[in-house]
Length: 235
Image (tube, one colour):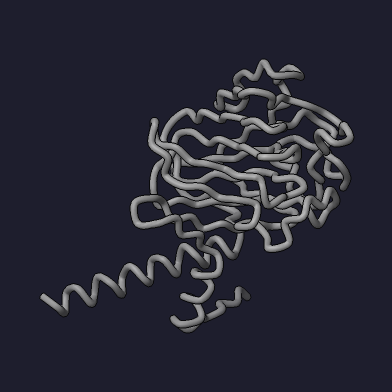
């Protein structure tokens, strides 16, 4: 028998506030759902395994990858430069990675002290990535054309963003935006922003939505309905 868990409106609103990153009135609001292990299903995937090593970039999973000035596609680890994200549980399964826990053995992207630019094949509202050794100085910036719609940083992912290279420092980060974006720029002010296994979609993942993300979506819907009801009463 399926169990239905009920939440009070105040509790649900608290969950939304806890998982939402508000970037200001003119920019997007993001729901950021970081998980250790796990990845969504039913979306578009890019694993970067076909990209050549080095700064050339290229197309992978419908995404055009480019680097400025010293990001690159890498494998393995190089002390002081980059370390592979940690594959655990099911966070690599939809991307064809080995299910054995351990450092990512396939190609992944490293920003260095520059940027990795992901140009998407259209306008999206959902973006996910396997974010390794999350640090405070890691930043994702979302663009719609030339206009920036907002940013997500390592501290938005976890309060303990300290560069842990093990299982507890890698998250599958699901990001839902209330504004369209068609380009994502990953950057870092210090070496150590590595990521792999990107997913993207025009809407929230249709299946396998992580619970914090689904609760946030439900809460936003309820909040919007409440605001609409208040405006109707005021008319």
